[in-house]
Length: 185
Image 1 (cartoon, rainbow, N blue to C red):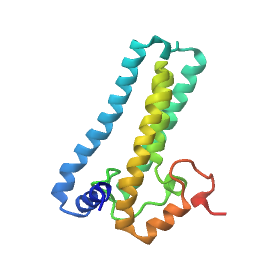
Image 2 (cartoon, rainbow, N blue to C red; image 1 turned 90 degrees about the horizontal axis):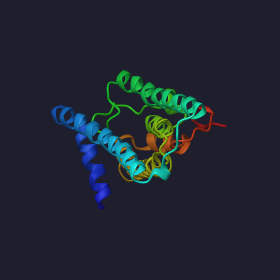
Image 3 (tube, rainbow, N blue to C red; image 1 turned 90 degrees about the vertical axis):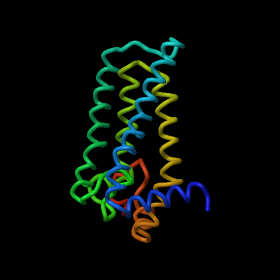
Image 4 (tube, rainbow, N blue to C red; image 1 turned 30 degrees about the vertical axis):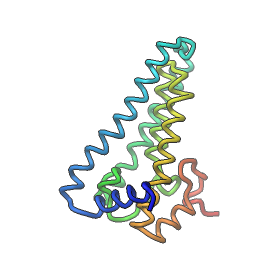
């Protein structure tokens, strides 16, 4: 059993185990995730200061583009949270809903909240005039999340929901929507 399998098993045990443990783990996981995002943003701003060539000035067009991306990313990130609360869970893997959510934005992409976060980070990069956030840190954040999803979260969901998740995973893309509900022809 690999380290990833053990961690996926740990997430599964916490998510299906004691409510007190889930209540303690959920805010810690949220803090770690958002702490990583803040770290990436501040690291990019620090690098921009050290290497001024990685910074560009704000113009009217990139202000408009950044505001559009920030609003779009925010909506895509937080709209699915409603689905989680309706299903009596949270988006945090340690306190998930008891059933697989496949409606709303989840009918089009398996990870709409992360897609929204990626768009939001790109919008921040444009707003701050940070080439390092746009071309280094956001792509690095995307790669880290894809690796986590493939190595941990998808394994845990396969274990929890079995064939239902495997069929959903086959039909619905990870991030880029097919623009047809559930990927059906």
